[in-house]
Length: 130
Image 1 (cartoon, rainbow, N blue to C red):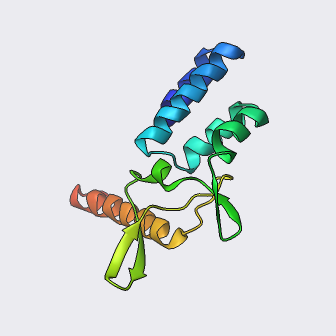
Image 2 (cartoon, rainbow, N blue to C red; image 1 turned 90 degrees about the vertical axis):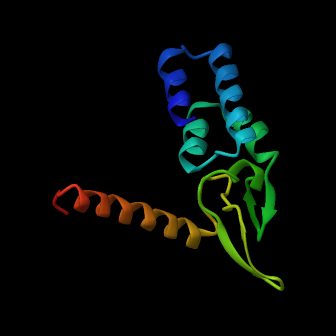
């Protein structure tokens, strides 16, 4: 979705058609649960504040005093936050604020480190240098 947003930004001239295309792409991204910080920041940088407010801030809920995106928008990002419940350990979607910051950052940091380790291990297996 990030690349699709960037293509629309580069290829479509500013105007109603571009804004409509960007909103449509962002809504599809939300529906598929793939909104991350990069998509959110890219969308925020190219649309007007009114459009951003209508599309993002209106749908946000309050989480410990911070406006956060709905969890359904981030459900398929590939990492989940572990939480302790009375039934044991469960996982929930990461919480991202409307400004693009990950609020529950422990799981995100673990996810990033696992990706880095896999890249280093992949290089070592291919005979590359670190």
